[in-house]
Image (cartoon, rainbow, N blue to C red):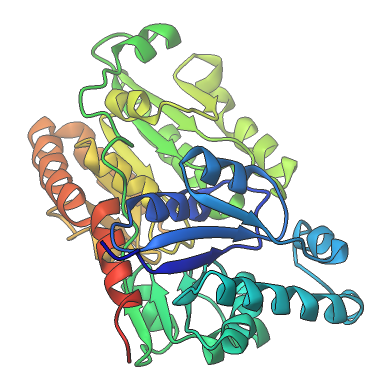
Length: 383
């Protein structure tokens, strides 16, 4: 049997493990016709998780100044870029050399900054570069460079593709969940018991990092608006403050939620490893984010059969038919968000119908296997 063709999967942001990094590991582990080699400019949590998943991993050291500046919000300034440029040229050369040594058929870049380095390396190696674009982005200097070098731009939603102007080299491939990510048999009763909530509590939940763009403040305002009308309702937020997010925002969330926290009707769970237990306890899921690429956590809720109310940030129309498989409200529309959650709390049959319809879509269209099949079909296609 002939060996599988090799693809280098390059990511410069190797010291964090959030959504994009997690999906990258899922993608690499689900490839059937391609041998993935994960490449990073330093060792950290992402290379560690790649190794744990059985992915061949190569650390290709980058200049120290690049590593330091990568870890700072806002990236490198003009002076730092000028100082790092000569050494980065050697890093690009080393990445190209690795591609040739491994006889790689191409280099995948999991972020814009990664693409800025992977693009020239792929050019030197004489192979294509695939840029995975995970958010709507303003076309700045880095984005224009990444686009110029890319053979294909893999967009995770239609809105991300549209943000580029839907160019010929853009293709939509949705992120997807592995089969074992969500346990459909999980129970939320133990979580309710630990929180001291009654078994018949109506639980409204939000899951996501405590960052301003996630708009947990809107979730809390919805909870405050509905609490008196639904005495049996309880509210939870699962997620922690990520690196770089202001501590002041988390403090404001607790100040806003104080009336409900004091009575035990709202809790902040912090980071939760077993998200299935959380989703199993939730009767309605709220996703009020200002901006997204897709919104994978909403898909997790849908896979558990939980009805979702989300904003029309990027990815909404890819996963939800408004009023059929979930509810979509305009970004920042507090009234509409509260109204849709109220509708779900008032109507058990509506919760069941929306939840079941959303579950069918999530389980059929947003799987890691489907994501991997489409990605490797693209990589094995020649223009």
